[in-house]
Length: 233
Image (cartoon, rainbow, N blue to C red; front, side, top):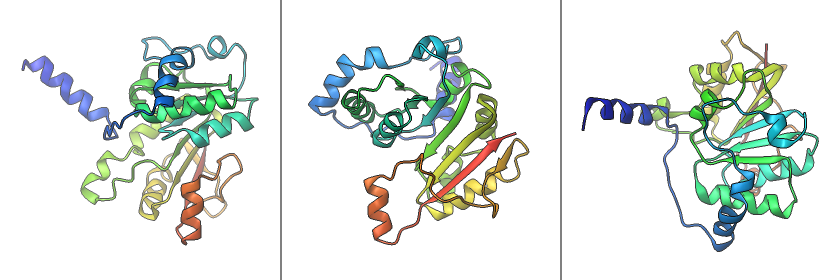
């Protein structure tokens, strides 16, 4: 392997904050990827996206990083049709599942991206363009030696801040208390953000975040979920 190839491989490994666990697509997900993905997806490109051109209107834009199977994202887009939503997810079954729901809900205000979030943030999202960025239940990487792989890091949050409008919201949620504490440790010292919690820690679950079946089950079992909301200064 050449030195240039080695550098390229290291760069690719460095930006990834996930492990690609690619499962098989169901028939419905496969159909959605074939029929809906070409019209409802955005690709990595060198220049910033033009949201007005993409959605055919001027509206607040919400970005979700790592939407899983897409149920809560699709529900949000259905309940907040006055906003435009973009979801980033690296796992194709999740993208396919989200597109199935988008078709069911007849969504015109949703686009999906099947690519690494860091590259999309760096190359495609215009500065000062997002009303809200949300990261719900990211991989906690609960072992201490793996904390460096967590997506919520100071440098990444600085990148996200550049993409938010002034007063825009960074909304995080996790069901791992240790990760919630870690998120708070990362964001609290950052001069770019203001914590919207009156107590300086967590906020009650806002109505804008749908309650998932997984979360509802966790609540019945006594498991906690922690929401953090910071506004961009």
